[in-house]
Length: 102
Image 1 (tube, rainbow, N blue to C red):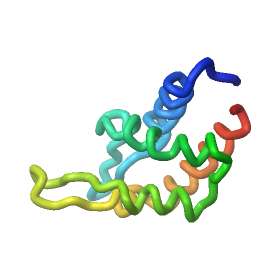
Image 2 (image 1 turned 180 degrees about the horizontal axis):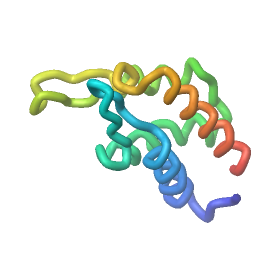
Image 3 (image 1 turned 60 degrees about the horizontal axis):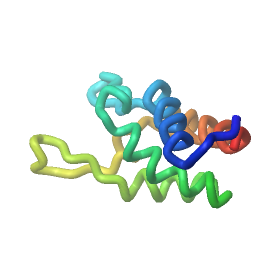
Image 4 (image 1 turned 180 degrees about the vertical axis):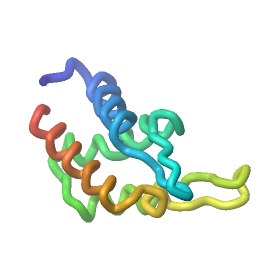
């Protein structure tokens, strides 16, 4: 599917992330859409797709550098440490499928 502009493409990617990617905290699954993290993550990942630089290492770098404040902001953790490996694999598949649509 071709998107009219970058904003539409990022919104579509953010929707997919919101529905499929979650944080795992004490076996509780908090989907990124509910945590309001889907749009910031999509904004960081979209350039990898747009510039045809998608790779596991590039996605991992984005996940490692995106910091999530916890405990009222007393600490920050990399989002990578909160997304289970299986869900990160699902994210990679989602991104590959999405790139095929661009």
